[in-house]
Image (tube, rainbow, N blue to C red; front, side, top):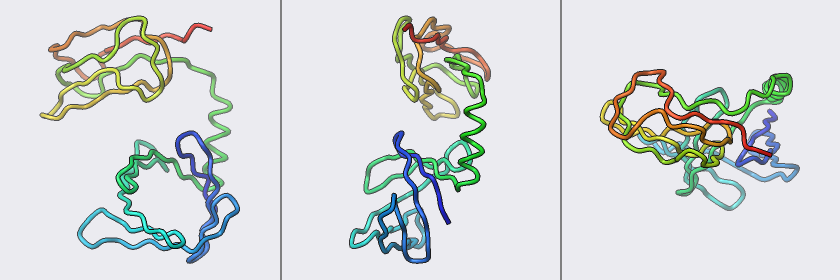
Length: 170
């Protein structure tokens, strides 16, 4: 089976064929072993063994991986799903930066940005506490902070706009 995997902005082609894996044209022996009673998997690639834990991401094919202590976000889709996703993305109109909205009710613990700051996709903007857990809310796209609508210590409802983002000036 052939997969197209995006890791840190780089697309890698991975083909699985029994105990062999071909990564961008280079074939190696590989195996996957589950460690009983844990979420840990041992991945052997050639002579190297890696300790991996994997958690599903927000959408199909997205994964948050811990590989030997390093965090990696990856998206692995088969050829058909990758083609559909790429076509959908290409036909979608550019929407620009979207405001940061509270995904759940909670208490604003910390605001990490100020008006005028340029932020990148994935950058932490606000930390809210919900159900006794702190959740860092991140920008979905790059942009410029045009307004902060909340203050530290403020209770917010689900759907409350926390931070307004605008396009990055050219």
